[in-house]
Structure formats: structure tokens, C-alpha cells
Length: 133
Image (tube, rainbow, N blue to C red; front, top):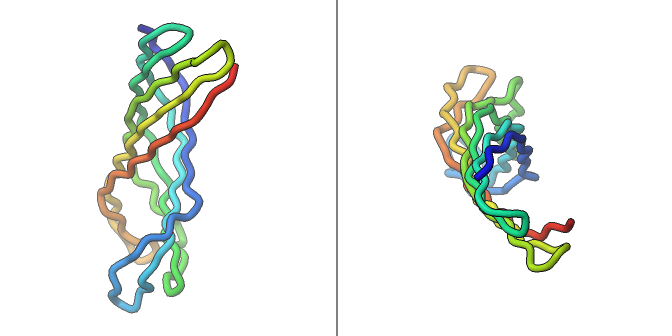
């Protein structure tokens, strides 16, 4: 077992989702999330394969865009706890398969006249890939 310190950057590229039609809002809005988080991880395994559990605390930039939504003067930055785990397994000396499942639990933000409110929400991100050494 090993203890690790690091960081993580997460950005969506504008997920379009259906929204409830009320107050003249469009039926589709685009949501963008950006987060830069310091991480603490617990790593289990050896050089050719390991698993990990990790977590961190930061704020997340949360932007909602739509046809009839005026851009906010300031974007909400809810406090966010991110946690998850994954593994990396080398199939030979140079190629590994990786899997990472992470959750971003964002606190609600109270709105004001210049900033829209945001609800408490949890976003799940699954990453599957390859690594080379």
C-alpha cells in the first residue's frame, strides 16, 4: 500500500440536456463543468498492476447556457467533493488498461439577481483507456 498526492482536472465540453419548460426557458440547455482538485490517494498493488481509492475537495465552475438564458455575471462555484477509485493493469511491459470511476458531489448554491441557483447534485464520470510506459 502507498499513499499518493496529486491533482485532477475535469472539464465537460457542453453536455446538452432536456430541461423542464417553464418561464419561457428552452427545452434544451447546455451545462458545462470545470474542476481542478488536489487529490489524496491510497494505492494497492505492484508495478504491473494496482488499484486505488482517491478523493479531494475543491470548487467547481458551473455554467448553464441556452437560447433564452441570459449569461450570468458570475458563475456559481459550488463546493465539490470528488471521490472514486480505479485500477491499471499492464498486459505486457509497455501496455496497460485503465479504469476510473469518479463521483463529483456538488453543494447547492443560493441564487441572487445576478447568479442562478443550482441544486445539490452528483455527477458520475467513467474513464476507460490505455496507458503506455
